[in-house]
Length: 245
Image (cartoon, rainbow, N blue to C red; front, side, top):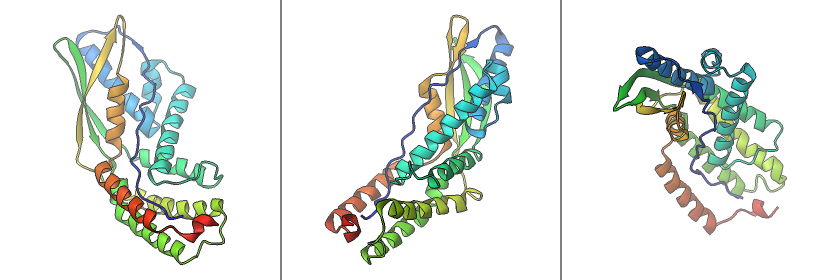
């Protein structure tokens, strides 16, 4: 079976909006909103949760679970994005989670200011998107083409499906792991995050968290979708004998 690249990476906002007690006012309230948004991003991507637990009253176990959920989600998204099949692979599934942790450890952002506009409070956030997927795109395409050439040559005819999938996925993960320490960043993205106030509580919306999440990791989705469509068309024209094994 030939491998086709690339699927669109899908981001899912997590339901992790902790409702906080609204007791401050004026400048102190703005400072608290700024701290809350900063700590929320830090806890989710950098595994830096001390300020988050202090600000929200969440336990360390809750913060750890939130972070693990987030990196596991990224690992699942990367598996889907590259068309991998490693969910039951006892070596590569944990390796992908560790890669996701390392990727998110490189997250760069700043919470610039908190302010009131027409009786609504906002926090301005600047995200410097991780450009790893775009940076490694050509290497991945070259690897996929080379792998498919070896498939055509019959190199994997005697492989079991699980071994075949493992072999392919290992190469993709190798490329990402090799680039993560020296990865670049895309142009900064400026976000205006609304603070939702309800009675004596405040939080940010899932939609705003999704905007943060999508900005953290850059993907040229439109370009990848066109390439995936072209690869699918080519694959339909000639299927490998390995798919029948």
